[in-house]
Image 1 (spheres, rainbow, N blue to C red):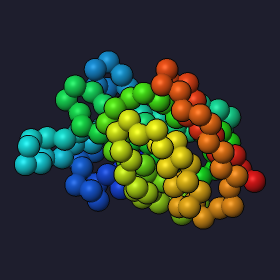
Image 2 (image 1 turned 45 degrees about the vertical axis):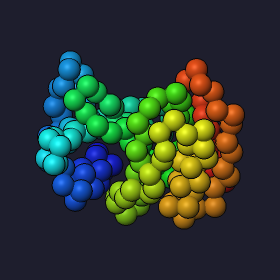
Image 3 (image 1 turned 60 degrees about the vertical axis):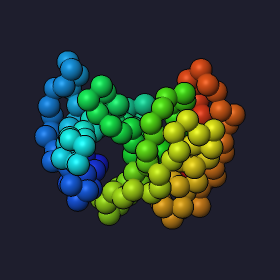
Length: 151
């Protein structure tokens, strides 16, 4: 899949070594990335799930031995549902399916009530599209944070 290649290239450019299709903690993932830092090893698990018709979510899961949680935002999503109430959000990766390129859009503050707005705005700006961005109220119980609709 094109998206996997672009995200993997981005992770490698950031110094992560990726192992594809590796099963970690009993879960099959699309990519596992790890890099050595001054404090030891920092790891990422990239998981791809189909949420809606013609839409994909790429989620970096935080595990006991992992450090980050990142969302890959596709500009052509019909509806975007975020996961609320989870700590350690560190950034957003935007993916352009036309050029097959991925890039880090911006970093988000952990547990920020503005997270949904930041994600939606970043998606619209980085995609370069005239998107109708709507932000729903933030729910701490894990329900939808926001929605992005195509024009």
